[in-house]
Length: 114
Length: 114
Image (cartoon, rainbow over all chains, first blue to last red; front, side, top):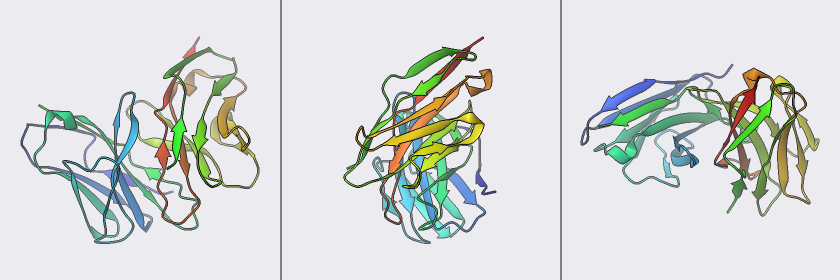
């Protein structure tokens, strides 16, 4: 089974702190994604990556950056956390082109910014 | 651009009753379609997917969905609800090209009454 792990389930940070959210997948997937999930808004794509050292902006990239130095690891960075970044963050991976773009999700990190 | 509409935010059914969760999509080309389920404090898990083979797709836990091109719909059904079905359900669409992103609906919460 594909396993996607995220470094923390719950995280509390203060406004202005630099925050790192780590995601690791163990099935050699090329593609990795970061979403945030908010009540009533569903999942919104922040950034994605189709290859090592490659990144593309999603729908809501402002205030975030990403890093993918190794194929299995995709990090989301909040350079200066703000209270409006309090949310559930979900990482996903997929294997193209044979997988019909099916994405496999990690358990999520619930981030609170005080 | 693709989009997904899930009308309403909450559905409540009695245990043993039919479950019907609606999903309509817009896409310029025949898409791939997905239903994911999210249990409390967990990531998303794939229920089923449509990949242009059979229009009636069977998934896990007794769920199924039917792709209707003329109605641009992919509604999720289960003949008899169980208490364990209480969760949030997301419909998602992707075009069929490689490295395509998923576009998610806003999600719908299913409650099951004893």
